[in-house]
Image 1 (cartoon, one colour):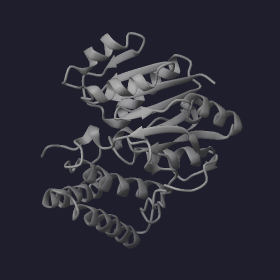
Image 2 (image 1 turned 90 degrees about the vertical axis):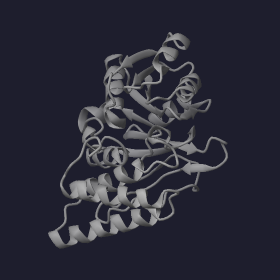
Image 3 (image 1 turned 30 degrees about the horizontal axis):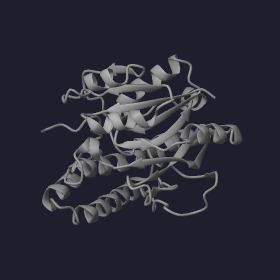
Image 4 (image 1 turned 120 degrees about the vertical axis):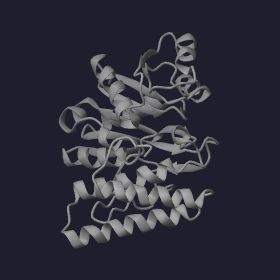
Length: 288
C-alpha cells in the first residue's frame, strides 16, 4: 500500500505547520487554498520535502482537496489520506490504515477516529446519514474499538482508495465546503465499496478553523444548503414530501442557530442556505 497525505491550507499558519509535522515519514502534498497570511512560504521553508501546490484562489474544501488528490494519484498513491490543517495525525496512523486496507480489500473509504485536541474526548467514531430524512444521525463517540462498517466518514481525517476514486469520482466541488464528505460516502458506497472505521488510525482535531471558528456562521449556511442538496440528489421525493424534508432540515439547523453566540446572524445564515438550496445555487457562498 502506497499512502500519500494531502493537507489543505486556508490561512492556516501554525495549524498547517503542526499538521505537516505530525505527518513526518508520510509522503505529503500541501495545497495552499489561496491563503493570504504568508503561510505557504513558511511551509516551503520548514518542509522542503513536502510538495507545495499554490492554487492562487480559494477552491473550497472539495476543490482544494481534489487538487491534492489528483497530484497524489499522479505520484502513484494507492490510498490518499486527507488531513485537515487544524488536525494532527497521531503516531501509528499509517500502519493502522495499511492494516485496515489489507483486512478489508472491499473498503473505499477508511475513516479515522477523530478526537479533540486534548486527545481524550472523542468527536467521531462512526456516523450515519439518512438521505430520505436529510438527517445525519447522532455521531457515535463510543462503540467497539474494532474495524467496522459505518455510514459516513468525517473529512477531518479520512483515507480514500484509488479504486474508489476511479469508480465513483472525486469530491463534489459544487458543494464547496461541508457535507461533501457525506455525499462522497453515499456515492462511494453506491459504487460498491465499504466505508470502514479504523479505531487505531487516530487524529486530533480542533474544528471549524478554516471557516472562522466558533463565532462564524459560515458552517451553518453551508451545512443547511448542502444537506438539502445532498438529500435531494441521493433520495428524490415527491414535491410535498420534499418540501417537508426541507422544513425538517431547516428546523434542525435553526435549533442549532438559536444556541449560537451570534443568534441573529446564525439564523439568517440558515435561512439563506435554505433559499440557495431551493434555487439550486451551489458553489462558493456569494457576498450578495
